[in-house]
Image (cartoon, rainbow, N blue to C red):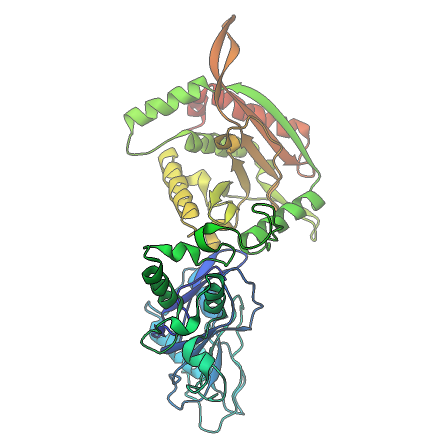
Length: 466
């Protein structure tokens, strides 16, 4: 669970996005198929839930109209939103809601079918029959927990108005935050639904403290008044950070890379003075194109892979084959709010330098905003890693499995360099190249790296192959 957009006591409408969850590939927002009052959220931000577990409880009549409770699995809906298909707000919204209602109850003689994503050829969705046995809708591609409606469960604390915990506070998070701030929950005025929400607690604290904007204190219960640590010596507590989402995907890829790939690394220092001058000239001639150092390095890398196609490949261990990929899908390392990610420019070899620059810029912005889709994070055949932005000169990159190689570029700095028989200050950088020794030998790897280095030192050499 990355972030809740609602809390207990909030009113929600059909298809309202209630929570952002993170899968192994991307962060997606989950819509709610019901309208009503949020009775309970079953996890806190940062918590990991197994697929199929309850996610949120809505106390309202189900859309099917018979008032029966239903466990709705929204996994397929979350996946369709992640893949960029029509979500509940789009053209497929009406079908989405019809399938939600159909999935709430199924008669005894009807086989289970997925909530979302089954073909139109199966016939229109049918409403549940009275007396039909409640069955859990199965998702074909589960990624998220479920949304639960409990209107037919009047004896649960969240649904009984006579239950004091349900009337005053439902969310354990609100109780904990109130305890951390030393607040008697009975003194906090509830919202219009009679339930004390986090927003109500925040408003109460702002009034009693006489300070605006104290909501920052209501985070995870680690800090108390004035931001002091509530336990232990400040800065010395042990912290355990779960490996999940995109970070888990990267951990798995890098671990597999080290475990399976017999890699080797070679490097060379290059004079990039002319490359920087070419960048400045392009900026002056085409300021709208936004061609910087990274797009030029990407253009050189693509040219190198066309000259040495063995490096644009992967190893299929099950088939016992080396697969040479037709297109160059160029990945590049980028930082995002969720850590290191590798967006992919698909078909980079078919793009002009200006088009490459635009694609790199768009993906970088989406990475920083945490909005990369799964398709934009997968399918790479080669990775370019510009770690020079971190102010370091060299590195031994770990190959992004299942690719066969990665090119790393260090920072570009002024260094003494022998130029035309004299020592001068030149713009120098280090190129490091890690490759899978199963796909080629050192001669091919060295040839590729020397090709890239020559193009960095003499960018005009690229004109020969245009």
